[in-house]
Image (tube, rainbow, N blue to C red; front, side):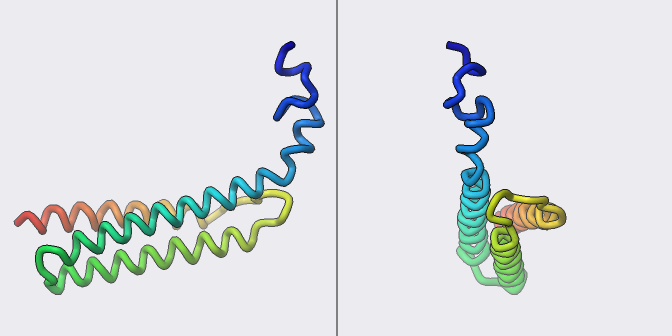
Length: 119
């Protein structure tokens, strides 16, 4: 039997689309939760890198930056999930751009802490 002829197959025909109607929003919500979890781990590792050798003012500033980025990502993802209609994810718009900037910010903080931590 081919995949297109099985009406019960996921994604196959109108029946497959009806079965998946509520699952798309749930998958999107779970993806945002995974993103928050990953950013939390990155923030904790950045904080550890910032304070482990010695707590200098520059390292404390990096710690504050990591915390601010974490707050931004968690707040935006929560806002995104609450704004989702029950039937689908909708357009992400600027929230994804802010998330990309936060991830880039973590990368810059990590490089700076690693480069100046070794010196």
